[in-house]
Amino acid sequence: MQIGANYIENGQCEFTVWAPLRQALTLEIVSPQTRSIAMTPQERGYWQVTLENISPQTQYWYRLDGETLRPDPASHYQPQGVHQPSQVIDHSHFAWEDSNWQGIPLSDYIAYELHVGTFTPAGTFDAVISRLPDLQELGINAIELMPVAQFPGSRNWGYDGVYPFAVQNSYGGPEGLKRLVNACHQQGIAVILDVVYNHFGPEGNYTRDFGPYFTDRYQTPWGSAMNFDDACSDGVRNFVIENALYWFREYHVDALRLDAIHAIYDFGAKHILAELAQRTQEFCQQQRRQVYLIAESDLNDVRVINPPEIGGYGIHAQWSDDFHHCLHTLLTGEQQGYYQDFGTCEQLAKAFQESFVYSWDYSPFRQRYHGSYAGDRPPTQFFVCSSNHDQVGNRMLGERLSHLVSFAGAKLAAASVLLSPYMPLLFMGEEYGESAPFLYFISHNDPDLVEAVREGRKREFAAFHSEGEPPDAASVETFQKCQLNWEKRHQGKHQVLLNWYRHLIQLRRQHPALQASDRRRTIASSDEEKKLVFLHRYHPSSAVFCIFNFNQQAVSYTFSDGIWKQKLNSEQSQWLGSGISILEKANQGDTISLPPQSVVMYEK
Image 1 (cartoon, one colour):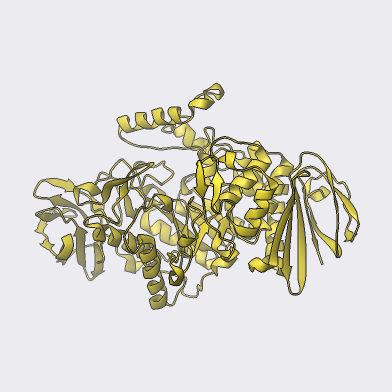
Image 2 (cartoon, one colour):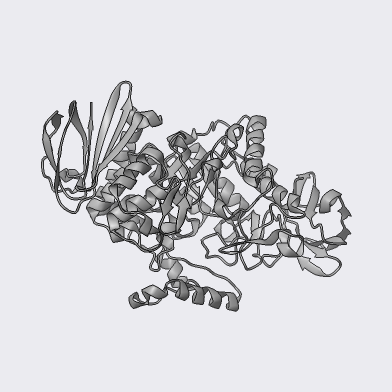
């Protein structure tokens, strides 16, 4: 069932809403002229009415049982925010110019995560367009937008959205997002959209007034779980599936990043993710266009990405948190929270080899066994990163990795991600060592809710009070501190780091062995005493051998086979390294000295 206000043509619009527990629904047109129309009940709790003489700018409410006025849960636009009427949108009139866009295979993605509000001073979709040439020059071919579904106010990470179909008004609304996607496709860049199907935000969340969107059977860190397996759950499942298809169909989005699927609970015979994957595949066949689903999950469960024929959900890819945690702990030495489960070179080698470090191994942090074996899944089903919005923004002071490690460490982190067999993900600004933090920020209108957020942040970081109070999430200044300083990318070390990233991306694209995505052609190992990680990647025509030195001291390595020619060296003066000479050609038995936190790659 297609829900929301679906504008057909010539002033005709079909309004459909799911409200299974209501006895009567009235559509209240409030602009440009007022009208009240009783809606007709349909099967399984849907209400519907089709009207003539409706303009695309028409604003409306739903009146529930003759009393309460509420916006449309499937509203396509909330021009005045989360508490005001919904607006009809005519999606057919936008002049798309991407008919020649064939998309990019997921295995070729080099993704760049960004927050629309802080990516530019203007904080709009149109302002992002002006930066696309810079990303294209870097080598980025896919941008991942943090959630853009309507949230309260104008400052928010996006995970407090309450209208999953409505594009944030302060970012530029539906037209702005379409212009951005259109421009991306014209410049050869795919668009990944972050969507949240595990919870709704607290302010403006009126969906409970319509029906059982939530269940008390399960709890998420953000409140009641979405109802995917309890009574009347078919309406909730339809809501989510229609939302996913809506982004693909009306906004030409190429992929969806599914937020925190470990907080999506469904013990029915067909998991909602499996049904979503099935419906997405049907869409691909009908449209003759490939789109993708990418899961964020800390379950380390290959059922998420396994194909349906062997009992999996059929999601195309997922993030690998283990890779990030290994890399972060080796570079920073941090051991608090879940980082206590990581910190060895052997673990990073396992992440290079198998994706998951915990594959039914005992986790001290969780105090239980965790994960499943992923070494038989293609590397192209995993995204890896050295930082993302969560890993930066959930720190009390929002410090980026470049704040926590040396310049050499930043180069080492970049090489670890971009020379891996997985799809790389960069977080906005990391490519030039952005100095601005990425903090948690909100602009809720409810003063009690704002105070609850403040107190919650203080409790969360109680152990860090010696470092001061957490920044006020509701402050405009907190938000403004997070805006990128684009001018730095052309200055000093920032420019060198940018060139380093660009060079790594070029190597990744051009070298046959770095393009290979077969597990059998990747071999990783380590030397724990010297803090070295070794990565061999093979292709029938060539091979590369990467040595990552995570030691704070210089260490030696002796080649055991072959004749190797140096292809990459982070210590060269052009990368502001030590300038220490490392053998350009290495034969069996030759020994090289590796400076602290350095990386070198050889080929044969």
